[in-house]
Length: 175
Image (cartoon, rainbow, N blue to C red; front, side):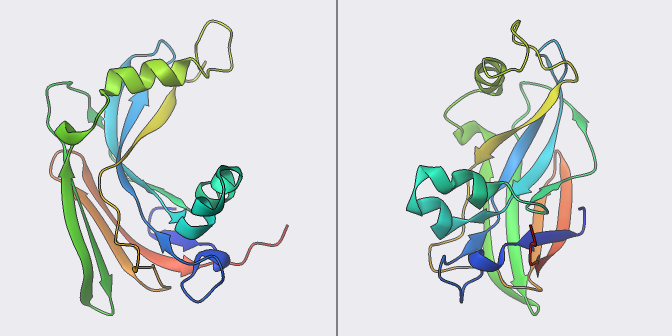
C-alpha cells in the first residue's frame, strides 16, 4: 500500500501492547541466482512492545497486512554506493521525529545478508525461483516513548533510492 501504513490496534499507544514504530530500511532486490540487481527503500512497521514480550510474538508484531511500505522505484545496485536514509514523522504538521543513517554503518554487507537469506531458500539448491526482496535492517528507530498515531505522516527519503510519503491508519483485523 503506497500511501498508507497500517497500525495494529494492539500496537497503538493507548493499548496494552504499547507503541508502533516505522523502521526505515534499504531493500535489496535479488534475482533467482542470488545476485543483487537493484535496491530501494522500505519500512516495516513494528508493534514494538508486542515484539519485546517474547520472540514467539515476533511474527505477529512485524508481519501483518499493511505494515510494510516499499518505494515504487528501483535503482540498479552498485556495491560502492553509500546510501543515506532519513525518516521524518509529522503529526498535525508538527515534526515529532527526524533522523538519518548511512549504509556504511551497517554491520553486515548486503552480500552477506543475501548469502544468509539463501540458506533459508525453499529450494534445496539455495534458490528462490522468482528471486526476492530483502529488508536489510534499520539504522534508526524512534525513541521508546514515541508511538505512531492514526493520521501521522511518515516520510522516508533517500537521495539515492527514492521517497516514501505515507499516512498511518489503525486497522481492525477480523480473522
